[in-house]
Length: 161
Image (cartoon, rainbow, N blue to C red):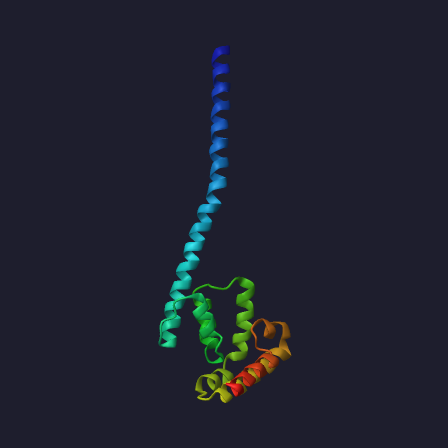
């Protein structure tokens, strides 16, 4: 009987050590696998967003940088923000900021931006938008380059060009 008890304790100890080792290895390995899956998921979302931006632009947008350049045009701010939200490209804090800007964009400002045919019209609509956002949240306006100073810089660049 003493032999069986010793054998069972040794077996239990060995099995416990093996399980602990497997668990430890699993915990070390799983985050890297999850990170890879998350990276793949994010890349898929980016690729889908780039396709949608390409449709909106009427030309191929291949990279995130191309997408940023396209979306920095005032005319496409609302559409780009909607595409980013749809494809989950924003973290929660950024999405909240985007929603705040979109709240200001909706309505008259968006229709003005989309109907503008001249750069001057775009800059006037963007200036109106920047004044609205700056009066409510100047830090947010700075994050999105929608301050009146940035709009004036764009106006000056347009005049020089």
